[in-house]
Image 1 (cartoon, rainbow, N blue to C red):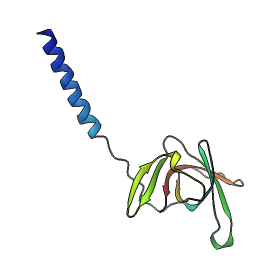
Image 2 (cartoon, rainbow, N blue to C red):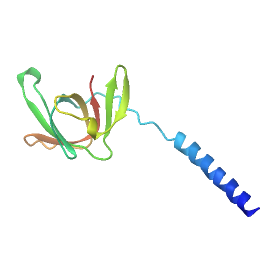
Image 3 (cartoon, rainbow, N blue to C red):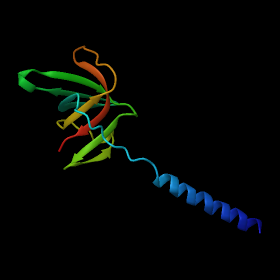
Image 4 (spheres, helix red, strand yellow):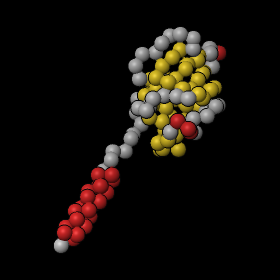
Length: 118
C-alpha cells in the first residue's frame, strides 16, 4: 500500500513537471530598430568585434555578450533562437545594446540582442 502511494506521488510530480516545462515562455526578439548593423570581424570568448563601412566611414565595436544576451538567426520572416557558438567571422548581424556605449576606439558595448541576418 505504501508503494502505491509513493508511485502515485511520483506520477503526480512527473505530470506537474511536464506541465511546467511546456509552459515555459518562448523568448521573442525585440521589435525595435537595431542600434547597429555590421559584420563580425572577430570572435573571442564572450566578445565579438564588429564593424561597418557605411558611407565610407568605418565604425568598429567590441561587443560583450552575457548570459542575458538573446541571440537569434533570421530564417525568412521568422527568428530562431541560437547561442554564442553560432556567431562567426563575416556574418552580417544586427545588435541592440543594453546600457551605455563607451566611446573609445573601438567603441565598447554590451549586447541585449543579436540577430544573425540571412
